[in-house]
Image 1 (cartoon, rainbow, N blue to C red):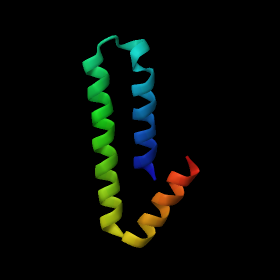
Image 2 (cartoon, helix red, strand yellow):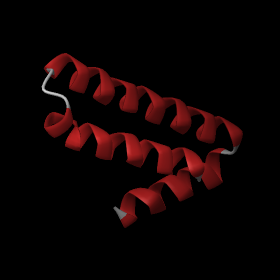
Image 3 (spheres, rainbow, N blue to C red):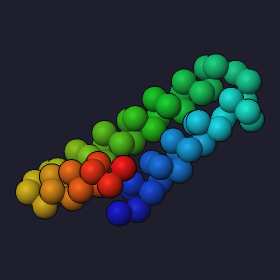
Image 4 (cartoon, rainbow, N blue to C red):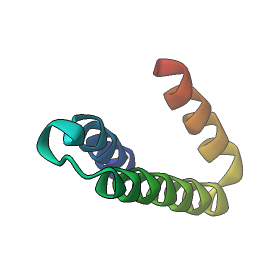
Amino acid sequence: MNIFSIISIICALSIFSPFIVKDISTITIILIGALVIYLIALAVELSSDRKTAKKSFLQKAHNL
C-alpha cells in the first residue's frame, strides 16, 4: 500500500534528520507526524475491511 511506503520514508527521514537538522524540536515534530499518519492509515484500513486489513497489517508487521 502506498500509505505504508510514505510512512517508511518519513521514518527514514526522521532517523537521518539529526545529521541534516540540529534542532531537537524539528525531529520531535517529524516523529509525531509520522506516528499520527501511521495511526490514521491504520484506522482507515481497519474501518474499510477489518479481517483483511488485520491480516495484511499482521503480515506487514511480521515482514519487518
